[in-house]
Amino acid sequence: MALQLGQIAPDFTQDSTQGSISFHKWLGDSWGVLFSHPKDFTPVCTTELGEVQRLGPEWEKRGVKVIALSVDGVESHKGWQADITETQGCGPVTYPIIADADKTVSKLYDMIHPEAEPTLTVRAVYVIDPNKKIRLILTYPPSAGRNFQEILRAIDSLQLTDRQKVATPVNWKQGDPAIIVPSVSDEQAKTLFPQGWKTVKPYLRVVELPK
Image 1 (spheres, rainbow, N blue to C red):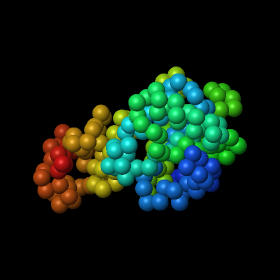
Image 2: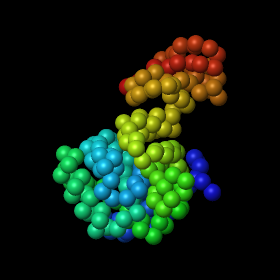
Image 3: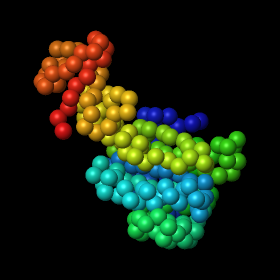
């Protein structure tokens, strides 16, 4: 059965480039991004792992731990890390890459799609919150590189909407106006948003939030 939003992310213990990792224990109280790759030494994935390393300060700012997965073994992963450092100008890869040769994690997370990749993991992304709940799932084809700026943007939205009774509109980015959720009455909104808001329609109330 495919994983769904709101479910607890399956726990596992698996070897990685940073030793054995028990996933839930490794996450601790942090947000997490688990992203998978079909195999090592693939061109699109090489660029992605470099970008994730370059974005290190952005993950840290949001309290997010990142962890990659590929079906090859640890020694292969380490060779790939050297290639990533050499070709992507990102410095050494400091986040772990899970070795999933036995496909334990691939099966737990429904990463094998037989009609797309008969034996290999698809390129999936799972955003997981501090309660270990899956909050976002993305699946990409082999030919399209992932946009990690979009993943950061989605995490910003999730973290904001966890803190306040708002939703984020199309193309929202940090600092943009948000939308007061319909379950909040105007009376409640006066307390929650003393700065006021613009009512476009009764169900569409736009509010500027403090920076």
